[in-house]
Length: 167
Ligand SMILES: CC(C)(COP(=O)(O)OP(=O)(O)OC[C@H]1O[C@@H](n2cnc3c(N)ncnc32)[C@H](O)[C@@H]1OP(=O)(O)O)[C@@H](O)C(=O)NCCC(=O)NCCS
Image 1 (spheres, rainbow, N blue to C red):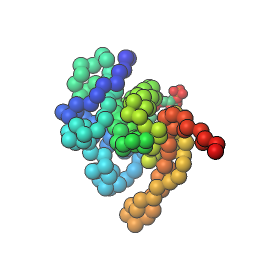
Image 2: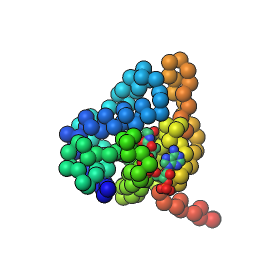
Image 3: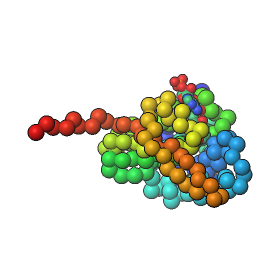
Image 4: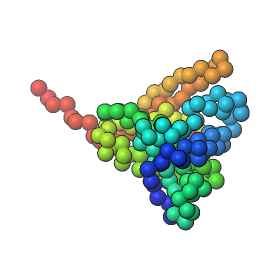
């Protein structure tokens, strides 16, 4: 299967939303949590127009919705670029699509002149990002149904920091 990465189009919003929901649900979260995350997991046409959103597509499928295997989105500006989404449809897990998307995201973030790619990871995906070369640099705490939910804050260094110039 040949897979390539293309810029997502606004009309693909529904399919991308479906992939985000399916991938998040894969970790076995209760349906009501998925419902609480509905807005975060919804990709609108306007979002696609305003962000760097790229999709992995199967070369053998027509470039319709069916051929989309996963996607990512970048946000932020300046030195800190944020990985706002990275989702692979569950039936394609383990086939290299996540790596392809992550490496593409790193290249795009570098092209945008970022120094750091910041990721608020799902706890289950932390080891994937570490495997890709990101480091855990902190944590972010949210409240979910009255309980704290702690997410690893991760960073991938896009270019070497300039060394301190000794006086
Ligand atoms: C995490 C996720 C993006 C990985 O995508 P994937 O397509 O299954 O990953 P790949 O097949 O490209 O794997 C790339 C490499 O990472 C490794 N890897 C994959 N998942 C891993 C994990 N959970 N922990 C450690 N390594 C992992 C693979 O072994 C592979 O290693 P290699 O290329 O050195 O041989 C995907 O499983 C997913 O979408 N999960 C659910 C949604 C989610 O939580 N996304 C992140 C939101 S913050």
